[in-house]
Image 1: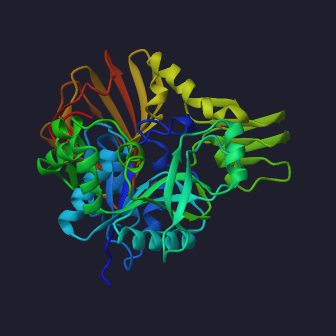
Image 2: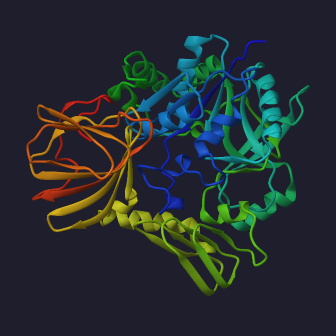
Image 3: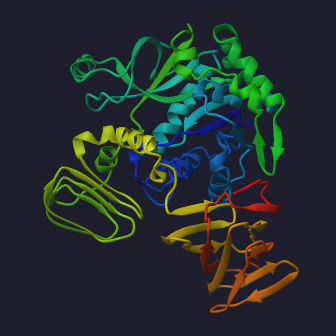
Length: 476
């Protein structure tokens, strides 16, 4: 049987509760928080069986497009589409876009809507649940996945199971959706039985979802049809029409459809699911030492218990502490009571009000050609490390306010400077004066690594005038 399940993978969140590792420009779904794969890659890997699934439809924001494309390339996965949202509008418009794209390819398409930042330990149970949901969707039901609770949890919504759906194991009509409860009510729900955690994963017939939206939220379908019909191709990306998509309300699938429809069903499963919504969740998911500690990176623990300590760049040593989360990155350190990590978002909000860059970018900033990383900054100078992937090149550009000195550390650089083109090998250098048109390329087979020293009156990344760019960028 030809696969009819089209995975629609949503990758639009910013993961603020996992700051300082998760940043707006490089959020948690793009990070390898559990294992070697990023959360996004792990999600794609779960739906890679060609007997069940078509190639995935990825829906993301513009800023992450090259990172996502690179992560898919590293997995040898060619998505059916990488769709760029001009603005965030929550999960209902994103699902509608996925449904429109899927049904255009296959009138009988089923869509499996998956957040890209969930952890599922038992993939076989997950796939079994997908098969049950597909059978229910073939009966015109709109299916959500419920997770059998393991403890009272206030961070998730709950689903009350209703009448059993005949002939499909573990599938029930939805009797009630319950908002995230206070602890006392969560205790009662778990003790009573018959309730699941709401996972935020869904499976529908694409045409059935669109028909239901036409009845319950017709403005969403109208806006998404306009956005899809007027979408533009941009390299390997599908760029939704900005005006059309922005006219959508900011609303979730739950509110727009699932809590209103008469056709909601839930497939319940114990698949080792977590939305990895906090540092405490990562502590719970990892195997700790005899004292209950989880440590990653260059960490030294002395008389420390029940803590999560992660070092990205430097040695982190602890002494005489317990129940802490300590996260070190190149430009920020978080120290938090493990019971308060759900409140990290408040820290991020405060940093945003102060205009701090630490909420947006890491010191290492990824670009489609590689990355650059700031190592020193002073009055009228800045030092960066630059890495360019084999066969890639930066735009042909010039700067009005800064000069640049490049020193090759590893690999080979092809340097364009006005009308001159030269090859530089390891330990060789060049100078780019203010106002000179220049380009850096890696013609070799290994990463090109160099040190860049910028000097001048203004060193901002917006001091770039591009003449040519392989990636369709106007500025940075």
